[in-house]
Length: 96
Image (cartoon, rainbow, N blue to C red; front, side, top):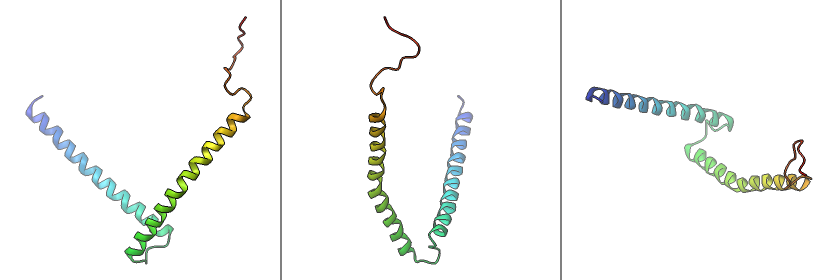
């Protein structure tokens, strides 16, 4: 590869990194705006908003294991209800 080609690639990388940064900033602004509107936080002080977010994070962390437990309970119930559980499925072939 020539030096010019390497420099061109490096410039492309820089431009793409800048595009990525801009896209992330736009996403954060859009989702932040929707978040503030959804929870009617637009007129609240930043400290209250940050506390609200921390409260949501704590609540989400506490509920996450419960959701996983429910999923595993459902899976085990399904396995217990399945009469062919552990057996190979026969598809039209018989063994002599």
